[in-house]
Length: 391
Ligand code: CAA
Figure 1 (cartoon, rainbow, N blue to C red):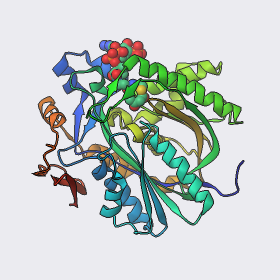
Figure 2 (figure 1 turned 90 degrees about the horizontal axis):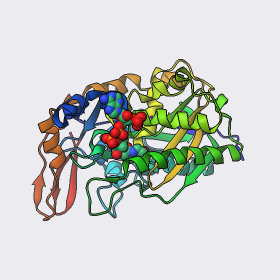
Figure 3 (figure 1 turned 180 degrees about the vertical axis):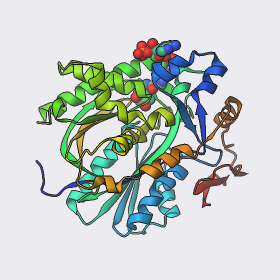
């Protein structure tokens, strides 16, 4: 089953939005006791896109440093994973391909399965690399999480993009071949084509997630995967950071292991640092957890990390990634922190105004208000086309 070629993540970069809404502002608006947000769901703030930001501008901003550092000559595939797609036909990755001037000898495709999509993209990328180790695949996960105003889901919004350069002999993490898989037809969270905001059955979604943790790890074990004790840490998909704690305790219980509070904290505590201030970034979320872990942990060289990816509906996968020697020299810790710190706090009214904006569907010329200070912006909607520009 295993191959001699080490394949995995060569570089990882992320981007988020111009604005951020502190949960204190949401709590003051809706009269919620702040402990429910800070402790109950484990969220401090959430990224909010400017009027001229979307999944494409975030994705291009996340991927640009990878192209700047490694060039684009070896990139023959771009896989863009999202569940907040901007077009039913055209892949959002083609706009990124254009903004970053990637080679025309390239295949670009968009993948969807709720928050799981980026993990499918990563696995497909690894298969392509195994076929031709000279190539690299640019995997991008980019999402804006949007629920109805004044709904329970509102506190679990957010937005971010993660870009990963996937290739042979990776500088950051080797991805192991074994995977645990789980699919079940559940209606826990979905977004019909006619809606901007997702529909969700909150409690059902938490139960479905926990069933998927169990199902994916069961399959992982049956495939001959590692035992729990072999992992230095666990990165979970984090729709809200408390979910990672629920998930890890569930996994420990399922395996008959001790759910000691300190052991749980040691296994997942560092993975929540970015998600707690960015909010749910759907496809990007588990990889923001990975970035937070790598940026803060002591040396993890050769120590496997368990990753659990969950997409409502539902599909889940558990797999292992092992940091390689020298990985710490290739982390983007400073840039990652700057991405979080550069956001401007909104008051509740400012957030609500942005939340309620939509493009008219009349095919007219609708320039967007210039708000973002990021490297790319959505300049207008014109003739039913999105017009992007580099700033
Ligand atoms: N101090 C401390 N804790 C408090 C508190 C206080 N003052 N008040 C309440 N809490 C606690 C509650 O006890 C509860 O904790 P437990 O779950 O550990 O019991 C927690 O805060 C949340 O309280 P509620 O369950 O009452 O909150 P809610 O009804 O408002 O809904 C939610 C919470 C279901 C997460 C909701 O925000 C939601 O629907 N979010 C979207 C769906 C979601 O994220 N689902 C996750 C799994 S699906 C998935 O992973 C895919 C995806 O990305 C969407």
